[in-house]
Image 1: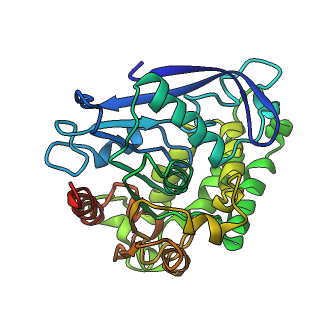
Image 2: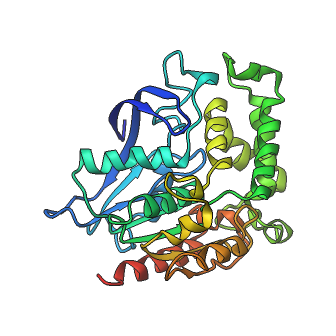
Length: 338
């Protein structure tokens, strides 16, 4: 096991359910310095686990473990932290309770403060659902978060994004083997269908028009090879109930639902961290205009678009050109008021 587990005990979730003996899986990189002033939180994304974030960590990069103590907390529902697939009855499988972005960040805050005694974070950053958690960290703990850089994500899931996810959900649950979440074996037909729905949205029209999947760094032999070898392979490794739990979290992501705030505009105005917001130029989930609206409402925030054809997956770590753009922005942000 290449990660640690923080035992949370019984946790009352935002929706009212109690998750018994909750667990938060996490991995750290680097060493916490003496005054505990070099910590960074870098949450995971939809279906991702901590090792899927490691592409943005390395010597000479902004997230350099020789300089920073980097914590990657695994989202609830991702199969490592408390999830439908690893929780005992009565909250196992289809009975796993709904979890919000706010729930995730509240438990991550316990990890950071109770396990490590950290009172100040140099940065919170994340891709996609990790970006949603980044916004939540900055709002919920303004005294703690110095800087934030969410990329290819949003503070609130748009209606169009919700509709996309309805298609993903319908493809998975249409498989008779799903059995309302009480399957004994994974509903592989549904997982393959989910993967193909996802494939049309993760990358841009230009990406497919120019057959970027046939070139480095992907180098698939054909479109079908890409759909099977990348997309189906990705989701066949996942548990269906876990995917549905995280999908609910994604669909219901709304910074404006944070207790004490009267909607998204007031919540965005409450962020105090030094902020760079980075959408993908052709992201079909979180288009730049959505982030433009947010940046206009976050004090002092800067919008910086990741150019190119990779759409949402500009933030996925597979394209070295996009990785360099994100890493460069992180280096610049970390250098401010250092």
